[in-house]
Length: 391
Image (cartoon, rainbow, N blue to C red; front, side, top):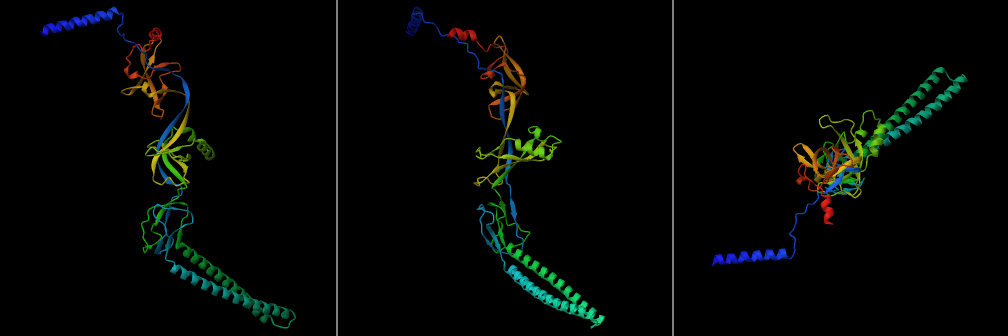
């Protein structure tokens, strides 16, 4: 029975094949498709150079007391945004107030002494001038004249000494007032309060740091840049003015957070160290970013992106480049539409999809792009005649 069924099945298949043949239907043919290619040309290209950076407030200030005493009040909290001149800490000012009052009392006494000395000097002057007139008329002796002269000179010296005492007393008052002012610590810049390691009631002195105030209206991103990238800006022999002009001519930079968020405000490179690090071959650099809204904080790490304009360069997609050990290869299409591998040297274009070719290709060369990893040496990659016949 099974042999009979197999025979019937074979007959049916043979019949279907005959029907298809009799209807004149063609069996599918293998189509030869071309690989994707591009013709090499030169173009201007912007390379986004990226550097790891760390933010720092342009005016970060360590807040320390100028006088010793008990900390009475802390007027701010950690992380608080403060304005310039705002009160931060208050130190017990009673001793400083007493010093001001004592200095004022000494000043008043010195001023009284000066007044008395001036009055005495005026009297001595009148007596001397009177004796001088009488001596000229030969009414008094030279002895009396010299005595009055000496008294007048002594009185003038007493006035000078009293004036010096007043000056010293006034200086003491000024110092006492300054020390009293030091008991109230205010913000020297606008910024954000850092960690506060002290508490009210603590005894503080100039050796103790109360906090760090990050002046964050402008933030500096500190990073290292290789000498070759901006060699035009760091050539030996440049004057200070030339260097400043070259730095000012650099394009604006962007700051990108570690999570990939791009800070919306652009910055500018403001400084380059004058010495290349012998170990790394790099220069220290700073880029300043405006921070009017206080969104940036000291210590944030991220990336500074510097766009470098490259003129007349060959740019090809990364999919066209094959890595073979330490070599980079692309498949160039010859006149007979077959592929041959050529060695190229490339630089990263910085956009994640292209390479800049520095050697191995010339303008007008045609290369395989998509599918290059499947091409074999000498394989035909373009089929212009087949494409023409299919149309």
